[in-house]
Length: 521
Picture (cartoon, rainbow, N blue to C red):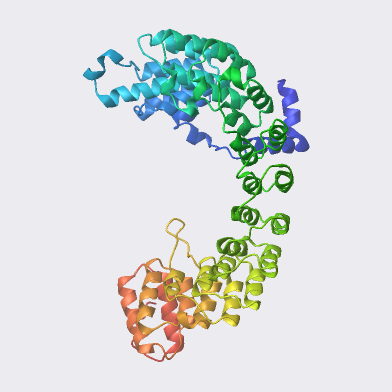
């Protein structure tokens, strides 16, 4: 690009913003690196065609372990020179399979995994230059040509697929040794490559009868392949469980394929309605109900409708089927947050709510649902307030405190003074901790546990929480003399916790006339 033009574009604030917004959009979900990080990551350098920087990195590091990901990135990056350099750098020289018993099993496995992975990934990306180089360089090695054949379908390169068919024939590869996930017919069906399927049928039909092409075609929505397979069923000598085809179409949310299957007489199903509910597709669900023979759903359909917070589907299922919500589904609905569904289950009596309903509502902060369940006399447990404390939901805790009698577990006192192992931050927010210490009987501090929790806070010098705890101590719980003893002990044990020691010192100074506490000033 002309440098003058580039600068004009780059310096335009409007175009600049537009360009970088698009860059962020394209890069969303991908890992990014800073330049100084890239310089020490050989995998990244290999995948981005930095040959000289890769050489410098390997030289400075004193060598790295042979890593198949390093080669795969070089293949994906499209640089044959980098690939050749890596093979030479690591002196890849695979053992002959005829000498298998004379070498270490681990060594053999390493070369087999890496060389085969190189070929398969090259086939996947259509890298004919690297494929040619591998085959010419390692002529005595018996490559996994069948998996490379299956991978070549994804390259879109018909000639490459033909090439690997030739290699499989030449090396008399036993295709029946491979499972259905590696079947080349299945891969072609998934990709919608009728031309490749036709070629394989004529030139390499091995393992065709063990394929599951129609399932793969349904999964990826390849209706042309589905039509072709069903119209030529006898030619392919394939047998299908026709009862499951419509179920599969519903599972993968392939409405158009389902309509075709019905037109061609494949309307039997057992789980299609449940599957349509799983995908939240009410139109598909209604169509199955109206057009298929003996179609019915299970309680699982209600579960899926609730999981998707699909109020209209819940209504339709109730009005058009005989199934009802299980207790688990009703309880789950309370945690999902759609009060319309909770009210509908209650009013139509299509499910029951257990203690778990209020526990779920509390955990996820759905105050409106919590209040509705309380107003309608549903049961609760201590776990509800426990969940609200664990998830830092003060409003929920206050509601349960004012309207319920269950309270919370005694173990919550220990929880509110605990810290996240990774972030090192308190698990409980200060405002919630203060409210609990001042209002809930489970959080009344005793003389014994005051020492326990103050020691924990002093250990990390969390002076803010030291002050919070001291301000919540009831005068009848612990004597000032005992606090003075603690202050002297902490000053000796935690001499580096300056802020916490100062807070306790000032607290005692303001609240006792004793002359015996340790002056840290």
